[in-house]
Image 1 (spheres, rainbow, N blue to C red):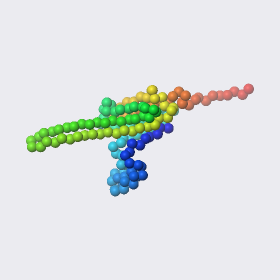
Image 2 (cartoon, helix red, strand yellow):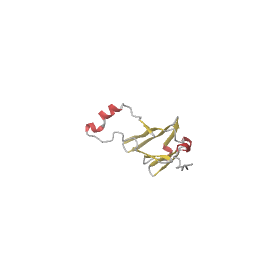
Image 3 (cartoon, rainbow, N blue to C red):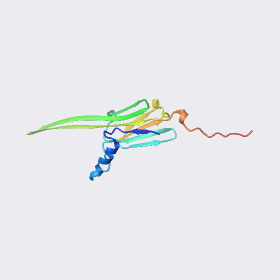
Image 4 (cartoon, rainbow, N blue to C red):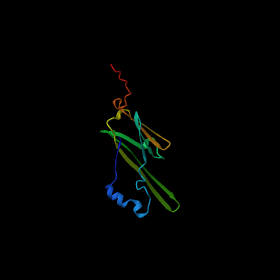
Length: 140
């Protein structure tokens, strides 16, 4: 089983008490963190993150000590000068998600692709972790 790690700044009890719904706001306080789907198949795990509007070069994927970290950081600065005013805008967008991988994952064979706003990863299971076929035992 994959285990998600939390990169929140406050303890979860504080987050639960002060989440936006407490004051009648939005329902999901983690709007800046992409939703994740995790699928446990017979031969692999599949992870999908919904991150539209990015390019594949924005992402950083790394595995360290059986912890998979997916992150991106985009910074953009734009300045416009028209007639009597100057406008300067900064755009910064970032996220980081970590998953503790089970020992059954073959970390050397992880595959990733980014297509149509979805970041997809396939984490193959090691050969010894795959289910064994049924074996008939004959009686003597």
